[in-house]
Each structure stands twice: as structure tokens, then as C-alpha cells.
Image (cartoon, rainbow, N blue to C red; front, side, top):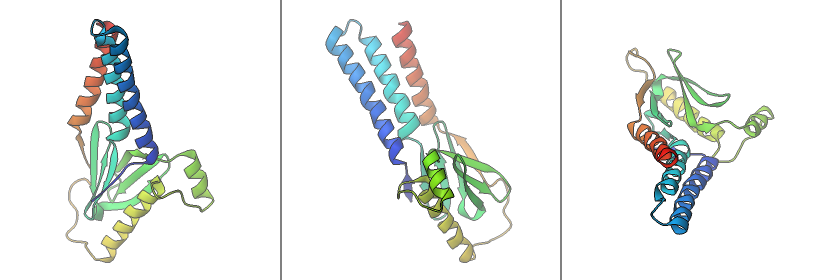
Length: 181
């Protein structure tokens, strides 16, 4: 199992977490505990939303299944049910029944689209390389002849990511307490 996150997501996520920590520390240092709820609330909100939006989302690639972990949802598709991998705005898996699941963690930048149009590749942590890895796994699965019985049910399974939902709710609550409290 390989977990993919883009380098830019890691950078922006850690910037948000660092910014949140800095806001909380500066607030505590400047006004003490009297008005700590403002700085702590805003700091926790920035750090939590940065973590939820940039550090948690990922593409998890395993030989049997591809899992797309987004901010508040986890979608998965068995490798033998993947009919295609598309890259228009983000990494998108298309199932054999036409269902689509997209990845918040693997957007396609304008620069990447221009490189792809010219037949060039991006760096090793790019969305294009993740898509190529998934495509290779799908091809290996097909060439191995893993076509068992006719598939039943939907190709994509979506479920709520309760940890992500909790982080978003807690971050919004911390911001509300800071601004209203």
C-alpha cells in the first residue's frame, strides 16, 4: 500500500498548521490567558482546517483497491472495476458502470495540463505519476486475468470520513468561539 500526497499539499498544510500555532503563541504571549480564547480559537481553526484540507486528503494505492481520501469523504474502487483514469481537473477514477470518484488530494494544475498537452511528464510526486501508477496496476490486473464472476453492485463505494468531519466541525467551532466568545 502506497499513500500519495502532492508536495504542494504538504507545504500548504504545514504552513497552515504553523500559522495556527504562531497565532496561538503570539496571542498567549501578548495578552496572557485573559483573552486566550481569541488566539487559541483562531489558531486551532487555521491549523485544523489546514490539516483537514491539505494533510489528510490522500490517494491510497494497493494492488486490490484504490482509496481516495478527501476532506469529509472516503471513496474506494476495486482495481478490477476501474475502466479508466482521467485527468482533467483532478485525478478521477471511472468505474466499469460509469460511476466516477475524484480525488481532492490530487488536483491537476494548469502547468501540468500544459506539460501533458506537450507530451511531457511532471515530477515524481505529480498527479500524472499517481495516475500512471494506478493505470499500471489496472493493466497488470487485467493481464493477470483476474476477471472473476460478473461484478455486482456499484463500482465505487463512498462513505463519510468521520475524523475529517470532526476536524472541520471542531475548527469551525473554535473560530466561532474566538470571534463570538
